[in-house]
Length: 334
Ligand code: NAI
Image (cartoon, rainbow, N blue to C red; front, side, top):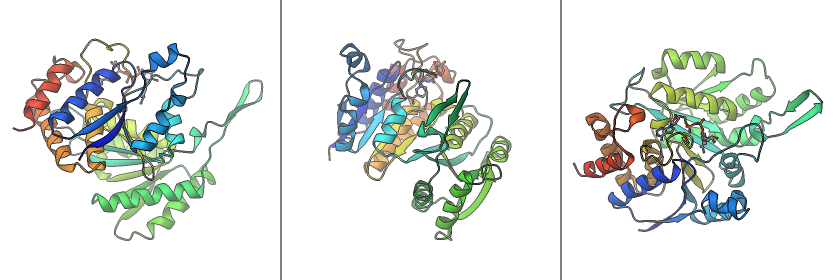
């Protein structure tokens, strides 16, 4: 079966790591009709905004996209495209599995958890305004509808993937109404899933527990901002953003993306590490119904890391992107 997948190669190292991932997927025998979006540079020259370049419509049609990193300006400039895509396609769940990759040095071993982050509201609603000069207000939006939806997604995910325990993370001792509503919404859903253990932790304690003993966590369920911060913290425990995948999932659309940035310092040098995008692509292959190919690629990736001879510089090796990619492809059938 041939799958249609929208490809957003992204900026900086994005096109280099996307090409590597496409080659590995093709070598694993999965037939994908990649539909690439227009390059950002071309659009800028034509004065066309990326969000209005047909990308949303293309993903609605294909229902699945693989995305490289995109440049976002800080403080001023247009809103983040990453956030824009999540909103436009209602990708309400951010899924971040965090697991040790054998061969990658990290502070902890046997970490295996999934963070589920509500993706559409909270302080990311982008509702900021100046009250009077020198005073700005940013609104934290929490609704029962979105909180219930993400809770149900998390409990269903737990059942589907054999996870046993979910921690709801909050600061409801201070934000009694907003985080309070998030918690009460989760508790109602949790009552319908007696087979999944449900616990709660205040965010500051959760961060400390995470760096002391991450092995105690199975799944974490968080609002948007806490989820953003804690998922990077969790990634740091297993080697950083270069070795963890990410998925943004809606009712029937999903975007799989690397969580690192465009790495402008190494762009174009042929030394970028495609591992994070490849791991996101592995999640994508499971999503589109290619679990066997996903497993083959995952095994090959682990073997290449364990062997340690073809790793890129960011993880202590000397290999180029091409050499790493060829090593994964060679290892597919070993
Ligand atoms: P960054 O992740 O691009 O770079 C941080 C450091 O990690 C750099 O030294 C870089 O060389 C290294 N690095 C990142 N990915 C790598 C890879 N695959 N292989 C080898 N080394 C890698 O973060 P930074 O510098 O804060 O952001 C640069 C740009 O990326 C900004 O415009 C930012 O807005 C954007 N960005 C986009 C994201 C996305 O589209 N999901 C996420 C984070 C940042």
